[in-house]
Length: 318
Ligand SMILES: NC(=O)c1ccc[n+]([C@@H]2O[C@H](COP(=O)([O-])OP(=O)(O)OC[C@H]3O[C@@H](n4cnc5c(N)ncnc54)[C@H](O)[C@@H]3O)[C@@H](O)[C@H]2O)c1
Image (cartoon, rainbow, N blue to C red; front, side, top):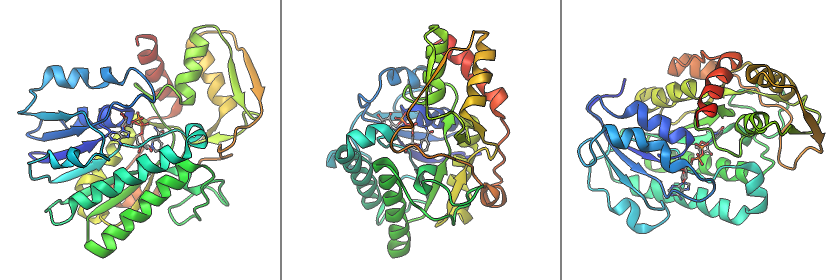
């Protein structure tokens, strides 16, 4: 457990960032939360509501509503930071195909700005959120960290590029950075552009769902609480510094199997149409998490059958 630390979290009001912030608040920690509340999707204003109501602004946390790319954003901070979790990014494979320049500018520039800010400071650990998309279509499965990186979307290229900057700042300046490759995360507050959230929306509105491709693509869906356990471990275990880890569930299922389970949880009649596979989508995501198990004591606990039920409960009350 991380205690009595000053912690900077970027992307704090997003899906993963808000869960991380909630887990780290309290225990004597002081959180510096940064988010530009971008308009990629709406509703993220609610994500930090519990935290901001329960804890005291200025004493337990501060919230900086600014873009990481603005020079003034990080300069505003006058605390000595112990740990940084860099979660902010413009996510979304399909969005990145339509807006490659914006995604490159946001993800790469904000990451470099953050690493530059860290130079000559006594920051103990920096965790950089990366993505399984850096692997592209796997040459073998399960995919370990040494698998070749063949990204097939501008988003994936930008995440790989940020990892390379992390490696560079670690090698050249000794910045204590760890990169984590998340495999399709789901649970309460999942982004509305992601499959499970979208599918439940359609199912609940009796609209029927559209699957890209034949539905036989494998996805390693990973429940949010498991991801947060891995992220926090990476921020406190000194041996994690300079390393890259997969954080997945390592039990992939096909999209067809996923959808069957979702209809059954919602007790609705199946209504599905299949359309052409989308550009940028990989055929398989399937993580090997042995390295994280050994070095981070990571152990994904929530199977999709259980996680989907939690996700559904959240979504029907949203
Ligand atoms: N959700 C997943 O399944 C998944 C999988 C792999 C990797 N990731 C990575 O995890 C991280 C979080 O993803 P998420 O699903 O929570 O996305 P999200 O969009 O919900 O959260 C990202 C947050 O960052 C903020 N942000 C974006 N650009 C910013 C900037 N320049 N300055 C300040 N704030 C900025 C956004 O407003 C948003 O609140 C991202 O780095 C993403 O690439 C997510």
